[in-house]
Image (tube, rainbow, N blue to C red; front, top):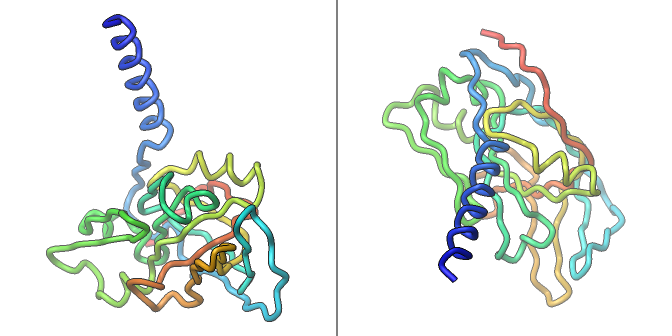
Length: 203
């Protein structure tokens, strides 16, 4: 019996080590590596999409290139069946390692948190140039691409901002602006494709 426990612990440790290696952080030299703001085109009267017990209502066509500030995977909350991963994304000066080295970033319970002892850039710029995004893979390819995303990478993705409704009445609405914070300030993204971009730092 004890030998099986040892084997089980070794397997779990190996899986944990592999998961860490696959998602190990990427460290870039100083400089803005994702300068453009997200691109959004609002949609009126979009066709609802069915995903099991959920319906997705497209609110805007959405695409962006940004630096992954943090990632968090979920399995047990209300959105986990369709949105297994949150990415905290940064652009503009929130993609610059010289700025990010002075900010502590974390994610928990579908929120993105930051803390700094001395602001490297104005507070409003931190808030307006970063966001927590709930990622819904639109297909198997997008799901595989999303699983490979690492903290620190510059990625480009295409998709839609969507509101989520469940057949029991529960719903979650996406943010449609980059200027909000707190509850309701996260984007819910139906991701059609996501890929790594090679950053070109601009001072």
